[in-house]
Image 1 (tube, rainbow, N blue to C red):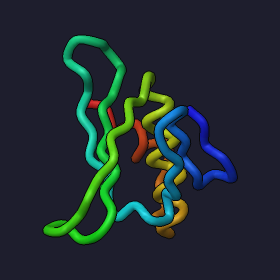
Image 2 (spheres, rainbow, N blue to C red):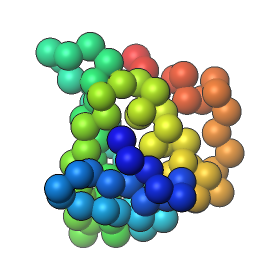
Image 3 (cartoon, rainbow, N blue to C red):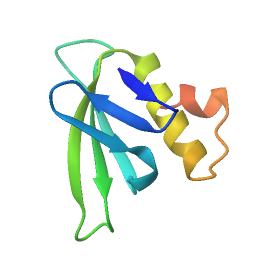
Image 4 (cartoon, helix red, strand yellow):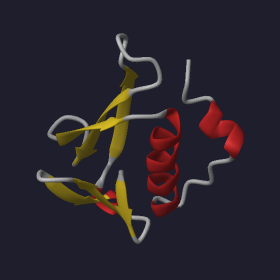
Length: 87
């Protein structure tokens, strides 16, 4: 994962997005690869939003993305909150 200045998420050879512009994040664990997560980062409101896909290769990468996004949205997340991301 490339996260620049704690807000720019880079998917090499594909895109750079600002986590500040992400409205919400959905994720799902890859059933065939333990602790790999498929994320959708949504822009706009729920009904008209567009999204980009990102694969977090580890639970720690998922937690880092969510933690940085939450911080940009002024959402106080604790380590316990982040640990609840896994089923």
